[in-house]
Image (cartoon, rainbow, N blue to C red):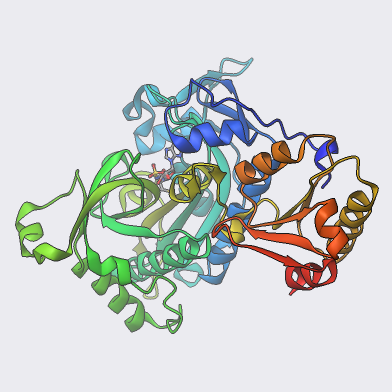
Length: 440
Ligand code: 5CA
């Protein structure tokens, strides 16, 4: 991508209407623009990050055996009357009437819809277990939308729903999603600690939140330092190993972690003093087991192996896809701007010419740009007619993992500069070696 042809409005000044660093940086680096309270347009660079996050979530859900589908954003009120939640949900639900005066709503979540879809087409225990998911926009009319995409009114969520024949099966589905979550966040370059959660309006007794530690987080958190050494990827564990999954779950729940809502002073006192960690955190995921809450109220039944009718056990599993963009920035930035983890970076490398009027610099940049593009490396080329210092500032702000800086003095010696955004390390090397390093 050539910066001169992109839509990448970078702000020089720090916006005064943003309170937390990720929101400020998302506005300054041109990731999003607010179009109404708590509603955001995703500009090209923000949209690229959103799509990378979404793709990681999708791949890890698929590996865990969940099946993707897509449900609509608009739902009928009648559907929600079946579970009794239409009245219970309160003012957070955006209620709409169509031209025929039919009551509709913009979905804040999809338990009702998925239960109805399953109920209308699944008749036998042979079709269980199943975990279905979609990645779709939600709307919650939050009283105080704030911190940008972190607490928006419209936001992108991955929500998965599991259906099992009995509680033992439902627990396996829960453990499976727990492992998928650990791997998902690990791949994004962040650590999200699973913490015992209160289950809230969704109901159920088994529930964990996944929390990224950040000083600006909305909840207060308490955890055992053992999580700092935790093996998030669990490379040896397979999804078809029920005993292994259960063991992982036991390990996670035996290691203390809680938010202010579930904090237990008695158990906290049992954690060795030197291992007690406290702080604040951002909830990027939330998983629930809620048994027959929706299947019972909505009349979902399948015929069991012995011919009797069975009401399936369910769980739901959410990830805040758009919130993650903010959460990753909270966890990974410095005074100069964003530092994208490789896996979610909008581009892998940025090319900067220090002098926009120097023909050899432009020729070298053009050559590297086209060769990297041909090699399918995601590259952003700042070909604007701006001062070198301004371009370097923008590159740091945007936070791509690598920068190639090209200037007349270096070219005289036959070298360009390769800078690592995270460590700040700079290395002089030939254009050829820079190309080799970035395509390795
Ligand atoms: N149906 C369940 C699970 S599928 C559910 O809705 N869970 S939730 O309410 O916890 O939401 C799931 C995730 O969406 C949260 O963990 C959070 O990361 C994200 N989320 C919730 N509300 C917002 C919001 N207002 N803005 C941005 N992200 C949000």
